[in-house]
Each structure stands twice: as structure tokens, then as C-alpha cells.
Length: 352
Image (cartoon, rainbow, N blue to C red; front, side, top):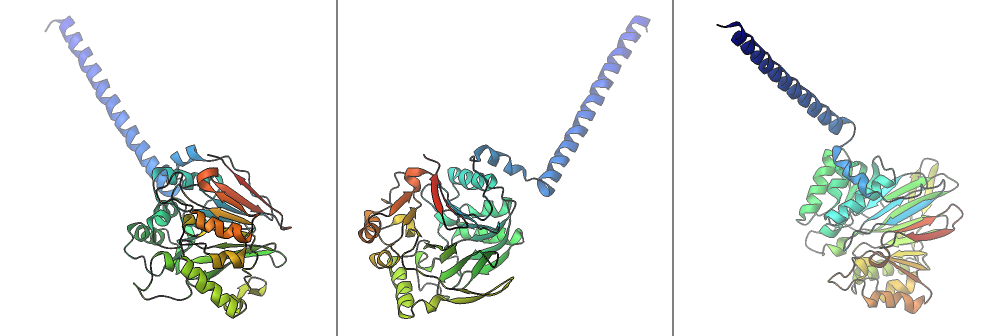
């Protein structure tokens, strides 16, 4: 073979060998990169969280001694996030799981600096409350999860319950006298379940009427959150409260510093989360007349097809408290209620 031909062939073989070696190195690097990403995703930082940070609102940090309740705008759904004065975090419902609602719920959680929720409460199994919670507990985790007694065939609620188990959360059934305590002996906040009052037989009540109803108190300020409970449930709760002069809901709890008496007072409330997105079937006259809230909050979607909030519930409040403020997520976006240690409070909102 001529020398020039042989040299050309050797050069071509060398080039081919280098190409093969380069491709091999690239493949190995890609394998290592994928392995590293998997390790990071599993043990350090879930990669699904990356997109969440694009939707983080600019929120001020909670100051010492403050309790904050965030009524997150999730459209025609429900999500409330409570930051207790002791630093514990509670999510009540998580929206319907739509893309926009997920962006709001996860982005708000990230903006608050939540590493893991201390508590997540699903008030009842409806999708507009349960739909977003599977992703919340999968990404952030939770120490304790409160579930309705019956999930009533709700796919969203069943997925959330399964995800809570995988996340290692302690799963409890919502019932009267469950409670959360936060803070110190001198200045503590508490949340107490007022409903469901007993464990109903499956099929005896609607999903809405099995809803958890919770009471929050801090620094002399009091709030009632009624989930999707109907006026009939409200009336039963009020009757039991009136007949026993509040004793039906008094509970002796154990705090780190000793026994404390949790004694909800429903008269002349400071804050009311209106039931069922302001539906005509909730926030009835009896509840409005007893509670007469200073500030009422409604979670509903802009232009929703249900006509929420209905004028009936709002009128019931304004009839007994003409100076009450009605705060609506469909008009104002996400809303934040801040209560300081001296009982002063403010309400702010993001705007639409």
C-alpha cells in the first residue's frame, strides 16, 4: 500500500476512534448527571419545586408574636393557611388542583418559607377543597393530617390520604374537641374543632354537612371557620351552644405548661370565614345574629357559575352588623389577616 494512502487511513481511524471516545464520555457524563438529579430530587430538593418558585408572591416575614391567616385565592375553591404565633403552620383545604390553584397554593407555601406543614386539615372530601392537597403533602410533607371520617368516593381526597401515608404524616380523624395549641403560657393561641360533633354513619349526612368547623382564638381575637357546612349544621351548633351556655364546647386541654381551659365564645366574633364560598345555604340568619362578625371572609372564584357569594349570606351579616367588612378573594385576590400579640389586627390583600 502506498505510504500516503496508509497515512490517510490511519488518520481516518484516529478521528473515528476519537469520535467514539467523545460519545462515550458524553454518555457517561449524561448518566452521572441524571443520577445526580435523581439523588437531589429524592434526598435534597424535589425538582418539581423548581417551577413553584416562579409563582412565589412577595410576602413579608411573620413578625414575632403575630398570628396570620392567609385566605389564598384559588378561584372557585378553598385554601386557608394559618401561621400560629409559635411558628406552627396549618393548611385548611388546598384548592381544586387546577394549574392556577396549584401555582397559588404551592407558591404561597414557598413564600412563607414552609419546610413541612405541622398540620393539614381537609374539612370535607369535595374536590374544590381536596384537589390540591396531594401535591402539597408530597412536596412539603406534614406532621399531622386531619381527614374526614368518610372520603365518600372522592378521588382527590383518597389520593391525598394515600400521599399523607407515604409522607409519614400522623393521620387523625376530624371530630369535636381535637385541638391545636401554640405559643406560651402567657400568650397562647388555640384552634378547637366544634364539628363534626359526632361520627356519623356513612350516608346519613351530605359531604358538606360532615364538614369540620373550627374556632381560632389569639390575643382576645376570635375566628370561626365553617367549611362548607350548611345553615342546618350552623343552627344545630348554635342551639347546643345556647342551651349549654357554651359548656358543650368547653374542653380541658394539656399544654406543655399544664392544663388549659379552651372555652370558645361565639358571640360578637371578630372574624368569620363565611360558609360554602358565600352560598345562600350557609351563613344563615341564626349564625349571623349570634356571631355578628366585624370582618367576614369569602373564598370564591371570579365570575363563578354558582353566583357565589350570594347576597343572602352577606345581607344576613349586614342586617345585624351594618359596619361589617366583607373581604372576597374574587375581588381582592389573596387576603391576609394579621393579629399581633396585643390584639391589634390588620387585613391586606394582593389585588387581582
